Image (cartoon, rainbow, N blue to C red; front, side):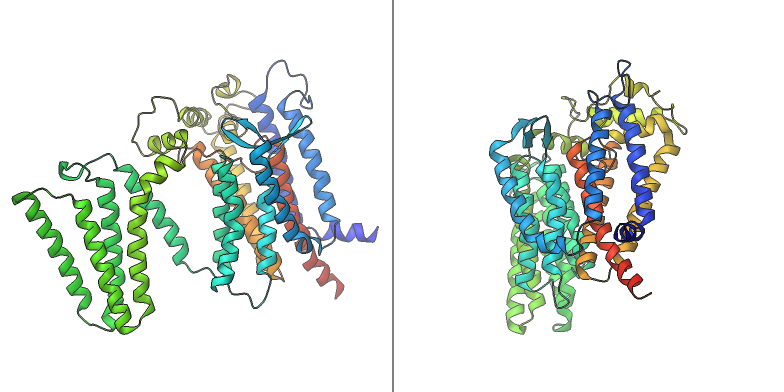
Length: 490
């Protein structure tokens, strides 16, 4: 009895309170989103609210099992679980039923399980296990390669299952890596790659100066690369005082000469002009790097070459890697298409539902958009529109406020952790929850592309709810170790 009492008293009460509040409010909204007059009870298992209650019960049992488990269990089994989930993900490619083009669900009797949901907390455990060393240095080539492999391997398999949204969640591990010493340049590179991708795609259909093949998107992308490279070349002034200014003048002169030739001699394709200038700049800086033997100059060369190649690969990635509905969602979001096939119908209806809720909302079970099923997937990916319609602006702020308190509390617990294992796992948990929250609410409001990821503890779905609960409860169990150690000294 003392052991049970100690475990329950050590678990973080504010986090449990927020978790239970989100679960209860989430269940109410699932009931509101899926409600029909034929439904006689909240607990009716033939309706989604009843099924969700069943999954909540299963998740609570799993939570108690985790809280009463051994504190050393999760570090001991981390690698075994990782190997197991990778095999399951691969197996899923061959045995899963095709559902809306995705092969990510395994049927077990009357239930369907999505292994990709559980791979997130398992990957977090594997990363925490590998990085759990006071002498660990993230940026050594071997360590960085292993960490990248642990993240990219399940991500790649999930992409093969046509679950791009679930795969993108793995980008959230960058938050943990940044906390553990990843230089700010890496998040900057990611943001820069997104900007280049968007710019090149957005203006890919426009021609620069009317020349065939002169994609305006490519020219803008290459120009951005050139400008950033020239800014980086300021470091050359430490060895050659006026060289950065000479390079800038030379680039401006070459571009000016190209315009003169285009208008007065023969038309030029400026894609080739900027590609040539970038290549010449990269070659010149590489020569300087070898003359002065400065590694940072070589980095400028690598940056120019890789980012220029990325600009040219954007079209291939967009046309051959993304699925048609994903392409359309991006095009509609960027204003490149008028949505003739209704690809953003969900988002438009969700915004109408949220807007119709006003300040106080229409009231529980009184949402017309919800009752008339105008919003597809309104109890899963678009559950937040039910919050907005039935509970209004006040209810939406209440929910988002609880999520913010939830994330801040997890940050507090992670910073209090006495071991790297707990801290690394904790920040992985925070990143996963934050990514789901911001992207889900963003896509409902039309601020992010629709990639189909659930809102934690709100969206209907057994696999997601159970995986989120396990993800959280493992962290809370690991956090109790700190409190148990403190109490042992009292």
